[in-house]
Image 1 (cartoon, rainbow, N blue to C red):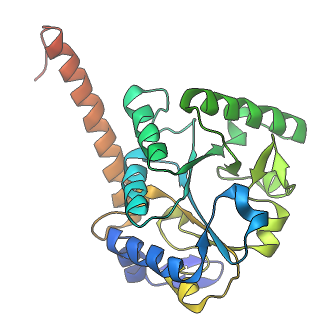
Image 2 (cartoon, one colour):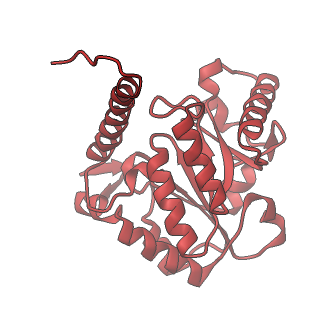
Length: 255
């Protein structure tokens, strides 16, 4: 059993919820209840849903979700994390994945890690968010509208202004107090299951946060999903090395 905020979640629910089939069901249910918007439309629409992905671990899984969303005719925002230990946005193959996601009509956001810089004041926060925003915008030629914090500290949770670094803050006071929130952080629903929230229509406006690595074809425990991403990445790097040697007629010393 998993405990979160004094609430107990059933392990079987945790495993079976995070499948591609259930992902499609949640999107279709959301389409019945809400209008999907991007972060630039927040003050223009009523009864909306913001569908957001923090890409911590797997761009490959992000692309799979992006294709599903495109097929279901919705638009979401993929928050890219340039300090990820699981992928490298400067690598050609991984950059192509981001380009592919954007080509499907989705938006790009910034997933920002203040701890990487040891930030503890608003001035530095603004400077570094602008720096990373410019970096991603220059690489992918795509305007960024919003950012999300990566594992925010207690101090960052108190940074509740609407904008930092000229980007919309997904953890602003307005989001916390006025817009409903559902998250699949760590491979289980934090606070409430998404399908239940959608069925009950509790919130007039709702922000949904997913992490693509959790969503697989078949039920898997969270650590199994993480290891699948790690092993897939490792296999790709090894194949890249072998292919380089072969294409350059070099001896591959192994075994």
